[in-house]
Amino acid sequence: MLTGHRTWIFENKPVIISTGTVGGPFEAEGSIPKDFDLLHDDMWLKQSTFEKAQRTMMEEATQIAVKNSLIDKEQVQFFISGDLINQITPSSFTAKTLDVPYFGLFSACATSMESLALSAFIINGSGADYILSGASSHNAATEKQFRYPTEYGGQKPPTAQWTVTGAGCALVAKEGDGPRITSATIGKVVDMGMTDPFNMGGAMAPAAVDTIEQHLQERDVDPSYYDLIITGDLGHVGREITIDLLQKRNIAITEDNFKDCGLTIYREGQPVLAGASGAACSSVVVYGHFLNLMKQQKLNRILVVATGALHSPLSVQQGDSIPCIAHAVSIESGSDIQ
Image (cartoon, rainbow, N blue to C red; front, side, top):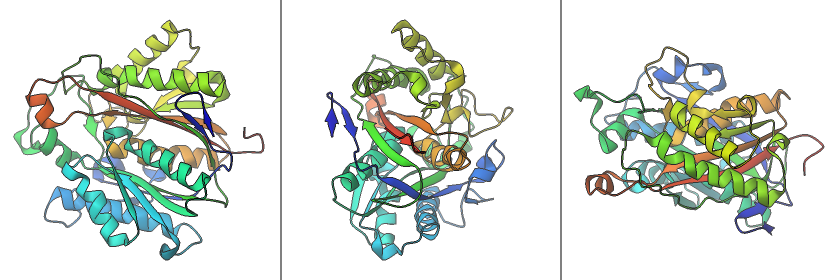
């Protein structure tokens, strides 16, 4: 099942049998509102804190994923999830509500594909039949923790990105109908010495390039094998750097088959500066928009490369650089799955 140094090939091809995606009012004004299962018109979700609102969205995403399937919640054997809040409490409190065995993860905005890769690994090895895999974030909660509360109205540079308010969850199964998870390449930490917490795209781009290059080499495929290679939240800045670095490494990726979730979720004119970010960015865009395109047979093979910056408020305050990571998962459908 292991090919090369970092890539798992899933011979049993676990299947994504259903998904659940939830967003906030700003996401409802974006470019893909029809790809959400549930959109809220209030950032607070009738909760007393933004952190509790994020927890509510994660709970809703898991409930929707189960409801959209043909199984009962009691059949779910594991919940694998993470987020950006200190001690990943939205995920942990959701696990309490679900009352199923739980793996809590933190890979920042790369958490969505880390959880999906681990879900597929466990199911491929007959360690479970059904696993809920998810990630969430909330704009106001993240701003308060990593930067400044939104009430301050602080100015940001053009390289900054807008954290998605949302939650996305996939129900992964041993068998059933839906797109198949065929492989995963696990990222390694890449640190280019950048220290600007307002330029996440630039910091994460080298990690994305490293994982994409390793995945293509270890699977022995060309970029054209995939209909789309989709990064998590590089935004305008990180996407351009990634394309440039890939071309310098003679990896023939074209702009047409290279998409970024951070440039997909919002419409032109929304004040998101360099694009979207957040642990929910890739989870809601992939589990909503891109999997819907696969269901419509507009896409057959995608490689999702979720990117994450592994800094903390404390590490930034202490002058540390920003370590980054990217995890890649290939999702395929059709009779020609390899």
